[in-house]
Amino acid sequence: MNRFALIGAAGYVAPRHMKAIKETGNILVAALDPNDSVGIIDSYFPEADFFTEFERFDRHIDKKRRKGEKINYVSICSPNYLHDAHIRFALRNDACAVCEKPLVLNPWNLDGLEEIEAETEAKVYNILQLRLHPSLIELKKQVEQQKQNKNKKYEIDLTYITSRGHWYFTSWKGNHEKSGGIATNIGIHFYDMLIWIFGKVQQNDVHMLEFDKSAGFLELENARVRWFLSVDEKTLPENIKAAGQRTYRSITVDGKEIEFSGGFTDLHTLSYENILAGNGFGLKEARPSIETVYAIRNSTPNLQKGELHPFVQ
Image (cartoon, rainbow, N blue to C red; front, top):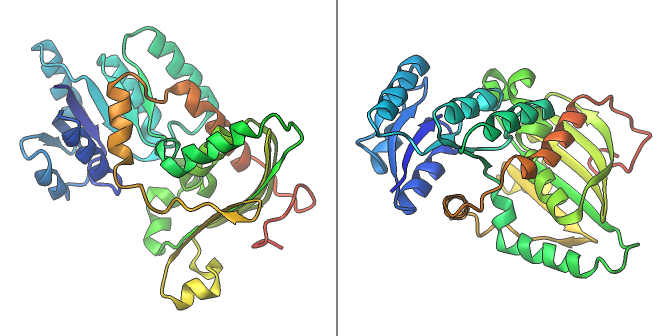
């Protein structure tokens, strides 16, 4: 049985990590969050020690280590800009880090983590659960089979609109410096998945870069991708609004919709199973999407380059 600590216990994704820790037969020893509305812990690990101050949490983990009760893994669900520091905390305590996306905000942060990882036996793992989705694994197999036709370029349209209220822009998620902006905060999942399936980025054009929406064009080794991301309810298609829905997600490959709405329930648990077996996704796997979103948020929008997404035209 492995001993886990959790940083960021009150957020949206934290319960998935608690569930995964429990379902893989392990134990949550301690959790940290500045917000004390974390009653969800009682559903999984009511005996876990809880802290609202990092300093006291740090001391507790160190005391456990010195008593021979060291933490084996630190699960990290904190705000994006803190991931790098919290991964370093895990490694300094000889614990593997299991971190949500984006692993870090800047490519050079990965360089620093590689150096620290090399100095310890602990590893850094990134939750990239879309790589474990059955429908997407099947799509990757189909693409691999078609690679003998080297001139084949799939035409992809990615649209993801997830409406957010005023709270979003007051929280760290609406702070460009803390979240990395729209493309980093809500798009990193999709960029990783697309690069994983269709190959390295060859061209990266940005057409729109606003605080609540972004759009652009990616040319990958085996695909041409037009993408649009938004948290603005006004950008929802009229039929989605009429149905009272606040989220719209669509990925088409050569005009055919890729259906992967189902099958998400246990992907975090499956991610943990792979990590515990030594097969998790590490710094190397995380790098391509980190480099992509970094380039996007530091680009100057240009409507004359690449191919415009229908929502931008």
